[in-house]
Image (cartoon, rainbow, N blue to C red):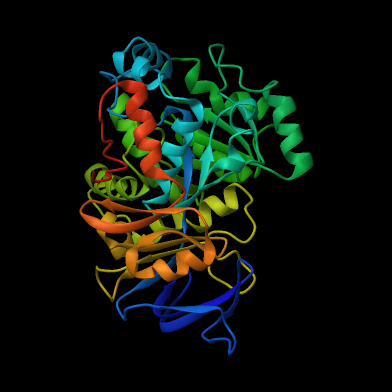
Length: 408
């Protein structure tokens, strides 16, 4: 399939090209600023449209996709929150839904907020059978350990073995780290260092209790950090020293965590990150920096070649939005919400968008549904209405989840 996107403003963290075009063939970007003569169709954008790389949610637990949030922090570490969660009626309600449908729900939550790629931190035995069925790209190549403490959930085979495999296969080794303030939690960076598991393959989630010495060591080792400010503040009323991490040049990405502790979606996460940074440091974080945290930075952290950028040869994973400030498209993305999203494209195929792009969906997919989301007519890959009906049958109530607000 070959087509072009014409008339929008192409935006990446590195450059902006006004009133340009993209040519896409077989899921890849083949030309920028030119249109092929022979194409299957053309997508014409309004002059105020912005074309970004599709977003990457650097930390989610798709199995934890439900609402509302559960907990009454601040907690000392993650374990008492987990105990509160598992004793709550909402957790029992969620468990009436099949694992596959929970994963579909989490996939749609990400997709309608512009994220075409998600890091789902869970053992491979859980998500490997489900990944091919998801409408969103779920990162499949990684090694994992739940965290570095005596009360971790034993998701991997041990830190050393998991990290060694990551290096051998050139994939990320992902772990929660220093998610708490008890003495054992604060030793996470030291433990990884002693085990020689702190390097450019390492992706560290949360880092609430990182000391300045920890941050210096992370920077020197070129390890990666994922910041989840909404979840951090809900559970602990604190977050990592994000300013120091950025000053030291650490590669920082942004993640939502699950909606049972974190933000509704990656759009809300960017907005909360901006306001929290301002609250903590009495200065503004650069909008472009936040956009990098959901595009190029996670692509580098998770070693995702051809994602997080717009260039010839890269995957045609794109997010098209309207509205906001023409002079500052990065600010427009950070402040965007459901109504601003016009189209989400994954590997060259439209997967979510406004109904004015119906012809593009017809040429790309056999399975999609017309829905109303926040009062707007939209098109979504798969059968999301059927999903909601199955959920309602399972939980015996017609519950609409705010991160997936379909109008019935």
